[in-house]
Image 1 (cartoon, rainbow, N blue to C red):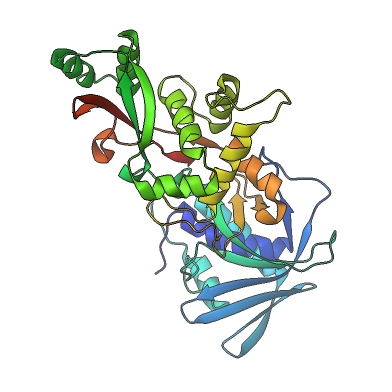
Image 2: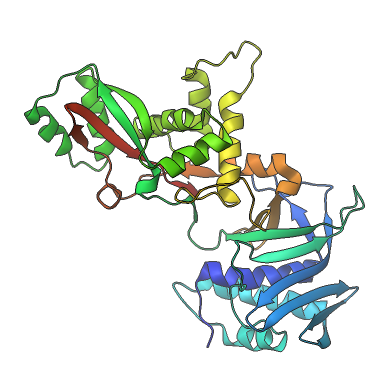
Length: 357
C-alpha cells in the first residue's frame, strides 16, 4: 500500500494533470497564469526505482516507454484520474492512501510517490517553445499549496547572524532581566529593551564561515544586506520578504548611490532567493552550479498548475520575492535570541528562516 501526505500525492497529481492538459502554463509573481504564453508538452520523464520512463504525448494518446515495454493509454484517462486524486488530496489529512489511484499508477509503471532522484528534480518536462522553436528539457521541483507551505531556507545554527551590542554598558542584572523576557514575541521584545537602553546592533558575521562565503560568492555585500533585512524582521511587525526588502531599500544601510534609482537591495536579494531555490545550502560549499532542477511547478489550491523556471528568469525571481516570508524558528534549538558575553563584549544572534506564504 502506497501512503503519503498532501505534498507527496501532489507529485502524482501533477504528473496526471500535466499529461491531461498537454501543456504547461507559466505564472507571474502573483501566482496567476501569464496569458498568451503556453508551452505544449512533448514528453514527461520520470525516474523510478525500476528504471527511467517516458510519457510521450501524441494527439489523444500517451505513449509510455521504458524497460523495453511500450503501451498506449488515452489522455482522457489521465484527466479523470487527476480530478479524482485532487478531490482525495483535498479531503484527507496527514498520511493517507488512495487505492484506486495506486492501481492506475502500477498500470503505468509509476511505482512510488516521489521520483527516485538524487537531485532536487521531481519531474522533467520537454516542451515546445513556440517563441524560439526550441524544445528545452526543463527540470522542476514540485511545490504544492494543497498542504502546508514549505520552507525555502531551513533554520539551523548555520543560518545564525551575530551582532555586537555597542553604545551601552549592561549590568549582569540587566542582561539576566532581558534574557528572561518570555513573552510571545520575546526576541522582538528583548531587542526593543536593548534599544531602549541605547544599545545598538552592529552586524559582525554569520555563525558559520561556509554560509558567509556562499553569500559572498553570490554577492560580496550579501551578508551585510541580509543582516539588515533580518534585523528589520525581528524589530518590526513585517515578515514578507518583499516588504522587508522595500524598507531596506528606503533605509539604504550600505549607502549605495541610488541617485539614478537603482534597486540594489531588491536585485541582490532576488539572486540570493534564486540560488537557494536551485541548490544553495548554508552548510555546503556553493559553486554556483544549479541542480538539474531549473524551477518550480506550483500546484495551486484549486488544482491549477503553474511553472516558474530559470528559462524565464525574471518571472522566477519575482515569484520568489513576492511569495516568501521570514519566520522565527525555535530559538532554543538553534541557539539564538539571547545576550551573551565573549572577551568582555556583548553579542546577540538572530536566525534566518524563509518559508513560502
